[in-house]
Length: 219
Length: 219
Image 1: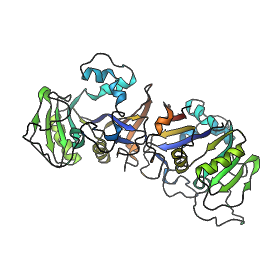
Image 2: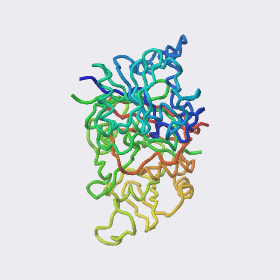
Image 3: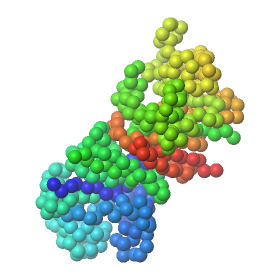
Image 4: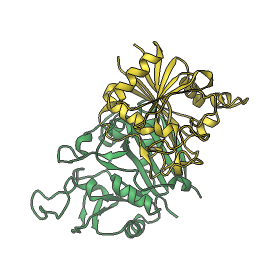
């Protein structure tokens, strides 16, 4: 059976996966870029941006696990767009097609969870955005079929990952704990009492200051 | 100037320093002993219990920092007693004198924060419990005077440590993150946005599975 995986999900020490009041200029709200600076420094990120260099240590080793073996992604509307509610720009020149330009870094079908379905968008490079109003299990069934035997990545944000964890649908979870205190935002760890019983958990602190937490479902 | 230190404060991955519904048999509520198993395994703990053996690695190295240089402790009523509210057994044979027997492991003055002051108790081995109704700053002034130039330890529980952090009174904070998910309880990390700016933070993951977080106030 293919696996359901989460990679590179960054949270603050107080457990927030994103801040409050996201805007076009600050998609993570008051968190700014602080949750992801560890990733920007890696070879993985540099390569995705078409740039040379980047660190090759433990942060990079974890970050690079993001891609291989993935056949589809599921993400929340909040990852695709900084706004919520009905789409107001469909069919206009300013129609929002995500943050990632004409050739997004997914290269697979991507299922965007939203209460406001809209027509699918085929991008360059193999990414196709599908917009579906579905439960975690329903969206996973769709993504599994599209992934054609490969794994499914749950791409975030934190509330989507929390919902999938609560529904018992995640096999591999990689959380990166960043030494900042956001105080406000969307908590990843809410209502998940006892989930450690279903997972082998390892912690790996990195020279950059972050700690990589890996949850691997027991067989 | 003497320092204000916190040691061996254990929290779950979701940030709870203790569970709900403490009783005489389960002072940490539904958390049971799970937050402190890492410590019970150390040479530090074995020595305190008068037993041989115990691990001598990174967990022990951090745990042992608890004692040296401390001249007084401040703790919450919730650490001294599983109950809250007025003391109902004063002067009786069952008068509560803490969890630690006739010779508690503090060997210094200990200031117990409570809305219900009572006469001080002098124990064997140098521990004297004082019961005071005071703000963090007021209690620290009292403890500093009693510590006579040595450091003051803020011994917990989590809400007391949080109050001292919010008041800017902690110099050294050692938190141990345990890979369990409590779901409910008393959160350590609440309303502390931005405190990382005042501290150097290091994370050290240990073979036992816990991660030691140290906050050291910048000079």
